[in-house]
Amino acid sequence: MSAPTPTLPRLRLRVTLAAEGYVRAGHPWVYESSVREQNRDGEAGELAVIYDRRDRFLAIGLYDPFSPLRLRVLHAGPPVTLDDAWWAAHLDTALQKREALANSSDTDGYRVLNGESDGFGGLVVDRYAQVLVLKVYTAAWFPHLDRILGLLAERFPDSAMVLRLSRNIQSIAAEEGLSDGQILSGDLPENPVVFYESGLAFEADVLRGQKTGFFLDQRENRRRVEGLAKDRRVLNAFSFSGGFSLYAARGGATEVVSLDISAHALAGAENNFALNPGLTTPHETIQADVFDWLARTRRTFDLVILDPPSLARRETERTGAIRAYAKLAADGIARLAPGGILLSASCSAHVSADEFWDAVRGAAQASGRTWKELGTSRHAPDHHATFAEAEYLKAIYLELG
Image 1 (tube, rainbow, N blue to C red):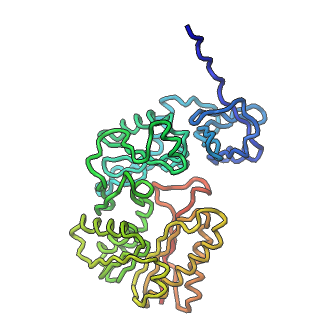
Image 2 (tube, rainbow, N blue to C red; image 1 turned 90 degrees about the vertical axis):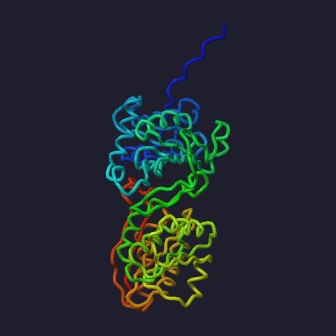
Image 3 (cartoon, one colour; image 1 turned 60 degrees about the horizontal axis):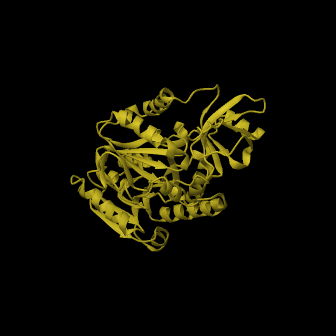
């Protein structure tokens, strides 16, 4: 008879004084460089407890030995037991924030869990009709997937669940028998999946598309564009699959141009228009590099939307990105007819909202035209950000004379 496997002691961490302060203030990350002591090696997904320098419980979170982001905090404050009831309540707290979306009669595409900002560090869940897409950014979630799937199945019965994996953890996932685009539960009747946002039908490639298949975070800005588009010629630059284009068409635009470098994205835009036969506004697609096309075209528009992918994926790219946003705004303004409106957006977390807005305002000022600011916007309610590193989305609306 083999000897029983000894039970390992709880994984205990002590961190730097600075890190203690960050955790107490609600920051959800502890970096490898902040861990000054631990009682043993840990495995991905272990629940590790941080004790402060007075040996008091500080926080508990998911440990990841493969990442420089060593611990993702699940709970900070008085000690708690992370049992089934705790996990259920933790999820329900996030779902309660989305009750209005969940009960909407015209929208069944939205973010269910927004990672750290909902207390689920490294895990995003998006809903597309009867499909839930789990985007996982850390191997620490692999041992907990069955629990999460069970909780979601209770709250979203008859839903299929699809796993999407951050590139950096796909080889680790393979060792666990997991792969990007894997259907974890339920049946996926078709892909792309058709869902509704504000009564408009869209398709989401949940198996292979970018992120989880669609960019749900711009819903509120798309709705505002609809209200601005009447009788305007609209250019949707970096259009991807045409989200802004469809809203502009429904808002009464006289024509809509979707501009993107990707033929695949433009085909998606055309597919989305085909899903909405009631949209009769002429829709043109142009495949080109947006920076080049804006600089050389002589066409003018009454509403220009600039929503590029991130231009600063690391801190070292921040200064160059700010210059690029200013240049992009200047070229967009040059294509605006008198009385035209510019919507300029950024999803670069390394560029602050004020830096971005100031770059666009500076371009308007340098144009020599009269201008006024119609407003700015940040994150949609289901994409709320609770700490600085999570704040990425910002947009500004300007009217040019």
